Image: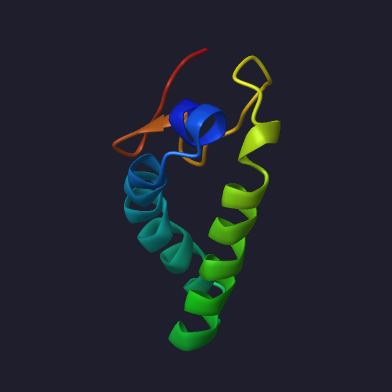
Length: 77
């Protein structure tokens, strides 16, 4: 994300897209959204990420789905 933010690196963004797009689509489809509509939503989300990359703050708190679980077990924190 830093390369995307700092250098508008298209190759880095492509890798980011390839990693997150299928996961986002699957997440959206779990709510019953049809595949085509889910793809459109993912495209909009990723376009927003590209456009707002300069606002990325590495030190900000972040939340990742599944960050408190590992292979079905809850990690103690």
